[in-house]
Image (cartoon, rainbow, N blue to C red; front, side, top):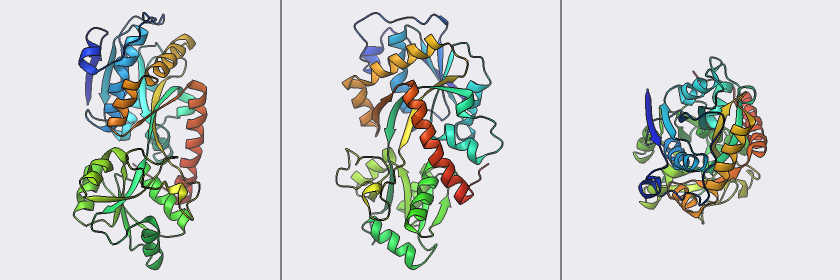
Amino acid sequence: MFRRIGYTLAGLALALGVTAPVAAPVALAQSDAPLTLLVGYSAGGSADLAARIIAPEISARIGRTVIVENATGASGMIALQKLVYGAADGNTIYYGGFDTVAVPMTNAKVKVNWEADTIAIGRTTTTSMAMVVPAQSERKDMAALIAAAKAAPESVSYGSPGIGSAQHLLGEIIAQRAGVKMLHAPYRGGAQVTNDLLAGVLDSAVLTLSTALPLAKEGKIRVLAVSGTERAAQLPDVPTLSELPGLNGLSLPLWQGVFAKVGSKPDFVAALDKAIAEALATPTVQKRYADVGFTAAPLASAAFRTFVGQQAATYKGVIDSAKIVSE
């Protein structure tokens, strides 16, 4: 399934709240054609929302129309494979995160390697996952949840949107670090997880911060801890996992960024890297990301590649130890 929306320079500031630079945009020499930004998930989802914030900002700075295309399916792999198996002609880039790296590790049918097949252009955002329980749960903090799991192995369930998802990996890492066995309940999406959590079917769940925030504000769930390197600005009283005894140093942020096909010209990569950094430095873009639960977190190309490599090592460790296989 494909859905395309284009952004041009005219009218973007008024329609989308874009903070276009004063200086004239620098056109990319590689092509004058529209630039397609592939997103592996449907319109309205968190990845799509994040991509649509940065797309017009890139357009305003490079002097090219940017078209967001939702190539959905296979945990984001339809979009990634469309990039990798396409031409390195400077007309297509990809907006990805955790799945870009982890899905090929758990699904042998996906013949893509981010390190060999893509160029990491620039990181855009980070956010946390949240370990949550229903508001009526007697487990008031992570210590109580872990104590219950220790007292009766596999008696405490946690929901995730699927086998091999970032939420699944975080649950596995928590269990491994804490020395407990929790019962993983994989679903086909986050909405089903939330429904069963609120209905009391699940003892706990790992949700994205953007999903957890409105539920917490409505008093429907209790957030026990977040997975980022720092406390969430929206939940300053909720600890990070790394602050907790037995989980010290545990951090698994969700991240997103822009990739190009390997073989893309250096000037193309450099221009996009610069455009992304400039956009993320503006207060308007930072606020728009914060409003949907993200933190603007720019990393230039080389640093972004190093960061993704470090994350990949973490993913591989838990995938191998837990023998996680997805289809």
